[in-house]
Picture: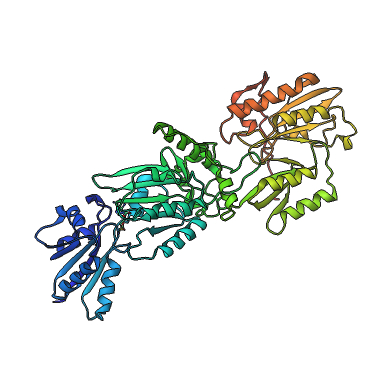
Amino acid sequence: MKGKLLVIGFGPGSFEHITKRAREAIQESDVIIGYNTYVDLIRDLLTNQEIVRTGMTEEVSRAQEAVKQAETGKKVAVISSGDAGVYGMAGLIYEVLIEKGWNETEGVEVEIIPGISAINSCASLLGAPIMHDACTISLSDHLTPWELIEKRIDAAGSSDFVIALYNPRSGRRTRQIIEAQNILLKYRSPDTPVGLVKSAYREREFVQITTLEKMLEFDIGMLTTVIIGNSTTFLYDGKIITPRGYQRKYTLDRDEQQLKLHERLKKENEPWSLTEKENESSLIQSSLENHRTTPLTIATEALRTLQQKQGIETTPIKNKEDAIVENAVFKQESILELAVSPGIANKKMTAQQMKLIADIAGDKGDIEYTPHHQLILRVPTSNPNEVTQQLQNEGLLLAPIGDVAQVKACDFCDEEKDESIPYVKEIHKRIDGIKTPKELKIGFNGCAMTCYGAVKEDIGIVFRKGKFDLFLGAKTVGRTAHAAQPVAEGIEKEKIVDLVERIVKGYANDGFPNERFHKYFKRVKEIEGFTYRDVPVLVTEQVICGD
Ligand code: SAH
């Protein structure tokens, strides 16, 4: 009878994490060959199999013994922890067989049974540190020259892979992990999250979350796997999380723009995401975007809390971007997105300004002409400050876009009717760019003509006979669009700025996420003493003849 080699990965070590096929294979075998500790780990599954125990360093002789026994017609189980194909016995078995001129049709049967490798089992105990492109690197120079291992660490570091280090340290090999840390610090911030998992799913399981800078302060041994995050990995509630993709757009008020719940997982915002339809149900799962903080602040905060809890002195954490830019190797390029206009009242761009905008946009950026008296400029850059500085030096007014308050003034008849301009400038100074539940436009017109349509904005302010009229709650879009309600006439000049500021800040604080200003007005019924009135219901005309 033809013998069989069953090359089995039994997973991290716990019974529940051994696959069904692996259990069956162990039970159907006549002989078990494996390292002592591994045989002990699967002891409960054994019936009357013959056991060939070997020490750790005798892998080749173990493989030879297994092949020899199979050739006598036995079913031989060769066991590896994790997956047998990951620094396990699978490759060695094939090498020994090939040496003997084995082939599949004539030789002994071979079945490789997959198992959960340490990169997966350890990651599961840390949160979701892998998520994106990752690699495994064994620090054991027992079978691989150290120069090659160094090269691989360097390559993985520079190309921003999440890294799982196997065999990180033994009693004899202690330098490698120090060298690895040094190499990675060339490319990654010292506060990059790192997870140390010892004996995952085994009796002496130990999980430690730390940073690239501090990882050597903890116990790392032969049973540890070290998982090192990439440049986007962050800590949240004691878990290491690597986002599914790289950071998306950012605008002026934030370094990295956190997308809102409804914006997540849409192709235009997160090009790496699945199709929109598939994601509708999974939107609920993404709870992170309820927080208005960036991954970096979450990570920094979590780390500090953790360090404080552990009584470790908190060091000032170096800015992630700085660390990266300094080394000039891995520069994370995001899309800077901002609104550009010649000024609040000034509506004329100079040729020089147009030229600068065009130069900055170049081939890769884009310039969008919008209905809001501004151009939107989107440009990929790893140095947003330089871009904004250039634009400002040319006299352009910059503003964040998205869910922020924005002032839309008229041109004050070429700035000739300039009496109310100081007021709009003051309003702009106080509230422009404030984060709001939904985009908020404040129209400001310098005379009763309102040719720039202030009354069609969320908040409309019209200067008339030395005083201000106020309009609230236009529905600016959709089939049921309507103008704002006139709520007050003749507001004194000294009062208008404070009043508008209170209205905007009230909405910013009390509006529900994504609630437009007119809906907020309807819900709260009264804003600063102005009462909401229902918009008259439309009468639908009967169409007599077909259209
Ligand atoms: N074939 C195994 C790897 C064997 S190399 C697998 O696929 O997981 C041995 C290394 O694997 C160890 O030094 C450690 O880094 C890692 N490892 C294996 N089992 C582990 C466990 N239960 N917990 C943590 N690390 C483990």
